[in-house]
Amino acid sequence: MNYATQHHIGHYRSPSANHANPTAPTIRWIRRLATEAKECQRNTKRQVESRADSYATDGFLKSAFLPKLQKTESVQAGRKSAKMESDFYKSLSQLAQHYGIEPMPSRQCGYPYNIALALDDIELQLRNNVRDWEQIHLIQDSEKTFLTSEERYSTGSTLYYIPILPLYRLSKNPKRKQVAELLQSVCAYLYHITDVPYYRQENSYLFWIYEMVTEWVACDDENEDTATYLAEITQAQWIGDNMERKIFNHQNLSRFRERLDKFKSKDSFDHDCFLLASEAFALYEQYPDIAFYRNAQPHTVAEEDDFENIVLMYKYVSFCAEAKGLLFQTLFDSVNNELQEYGLMQEPIIEKRFNGATVTCDTLDFENRLFSLIEELIYVLNSF
Image (tube, one colour):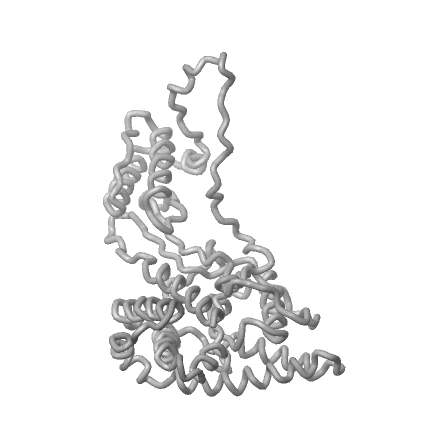
């Protein structure tokens, strides 16, 4: 996976006890996993442009070619009834009204080609006009035929691990008192409201990973890296507990607006932190009780037996101790290796059903803004 500005997640294998390199690689602070999730994303690259030889006729360029019937093969196997066709166009009309788009005329093409043509057209329009749109499905059950639309925020196989030690160092700098308080308010919002896990909480995923790495170090024979590991582990534990008490203080939320109003930027770093905190406060006001995992779903339909094969969101969104050093590199390698073994991944997904019932007006605006905020926070903290 990736690490938020540059630690991306892919998926992970069982942790191995291999030691990390003496120094962590230079990264933007968001890590991408070694490989992407096994589910492939859409290819957004355009085909290489080509042209016919100059002496070739260009008459065929003026012709429009109808789409292939691939998407209606399963439909053709069902009953070819007027009801099915009527249901489809009612659903298509509801979908078009919801997204504010205009379907192309297709009824005159005749069944089932009219449905193939309409689907091809509507997919193209959704792809070009609807942020986060992922895919459309034609559903045929025992009662009716209707369309469903899936919107997905792609996390890009990223580890959104927010380092807390840089915030501690910032709080100890007398020249950065105001900005440290602002960022504490941001972290308090993520901790209390969006429910981002904290690595010192015993029920968190990273608590287990840190404990596992600590056991490795304790069980291994001493070497030149042992003292460094032990010092980083002690620091991660002590500072982590100390900073959690500060972030837990609800004054960070009750005084959030006051801190913004009184803040005065002295340099570009202050200015970046102010913009970051302003966006966090705007999210806090607009979504005062929304958790980051509110729309978490596997990217594909999962059976009950698949539950243990899913990368849950709390595994790749969390506070961590530090984003550099031997301890973090070993932790990252462990997470990365383990997640590689998972076949499915939870991401923010909304499914909308156009079957005549009221359609949800939910969007992924919150997720788009929240994950961008976390990326920026990780970058800012690691820039200090």
